[in-house]
Image (cartoon, rainbow, N blue to C red):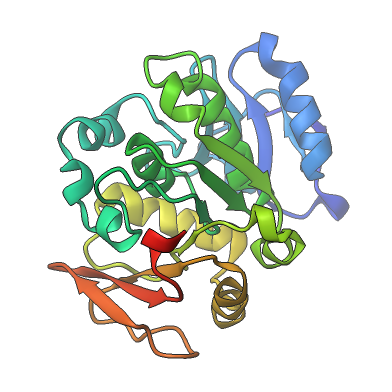
Length: 272
């Protein structure tokens, strides 16, 4: 393993940037510098000194855990796999997220997904025709998301990607910075919580992200600000048996087999 620069004091690094092909080194160097992370040009995926690599491969930027029994890479993918299947067969406007966000008839509210993660919920909403702002405060997750959006912009879902607008930074500050004309009609929140219905892939992502960014300890504060800023409603995604976020009770809920949406209705969307 060759490192261009290492963690301070020689201590084990939780995360480093790396490449699998030499032609990607300039992009890797730029990202490592912006994130203030070590850069490794010959990554050892069985490393015991680095827990995860933010890894540039010819196909995509991925988050790769190290170790002999490491899981597969994590990446933002809007073109293939589960996201593509959901786009084609997911139920359209009949999906619970669509109902929660008020999508019906020709109504397509503007939406801010302020806990964007890898953008799957935002992609569903954009697929249904909504303009969606994706706000992500983790620089690492933001980098994965930006890479996924850039790759998908040159695919057959480019029209959907054009409705997805990525924002880097803290959602609370971003919401409070919006002028009246910029306020989204709907604000969508999915704070980190161990959803019991999630697939093994998503559970793997949650564990990796929790190691990187921690739990969403400020979710009550984020909800309070969202209720101030949203034009029409705030929608919170929760596991079915999880408590509501601290604050005012939701106006109503939509409940599925293992998940639910808490809807805080402020004004009729029809009046928007």
